Image 1: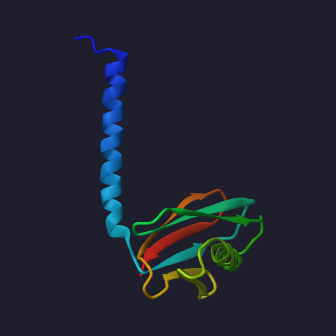
Image 2: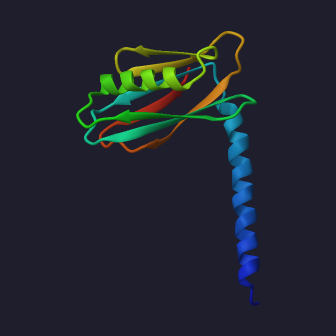
Amino acid sequence: MNISKSSRLAAAGIALLAGLVLSTQSMASDLSNKFRLECSGGADSDGVVTIVVTPDGGEPIETLTEVKKGTSENHVAKAIVEALKAQLPKDQFHIERDDGEDVLVKRHLGEARFRLAVTSLTVKGVRIKVKKE
């Protein structure tokens, strides 16, 4: 049986769409009132941390944090706090540092629960672990 190129592309597209649907369904369990970002390691290069915050039923908000080479893990956390405070709606979120190297992102009372993901990390030497609380 000879399957045409367009049929193979259509099948691949359907498989990709099914994967996206499953991925979106699994994200529903990722909703929380508060997330902790555990920063570890110092910056061995300049780079950017991209964090996406998505309120339940709302649009994703992409935030960018620039980090310079030589920045310690505590100062990486501080930079993330400052960037999130500047880029997220102040009336919806409270952002703070905890234990120096951790970042807490909390919803304000009455605001929608949300999802949080580090979608890109181009700073070498820095690791960020996201935990629901």
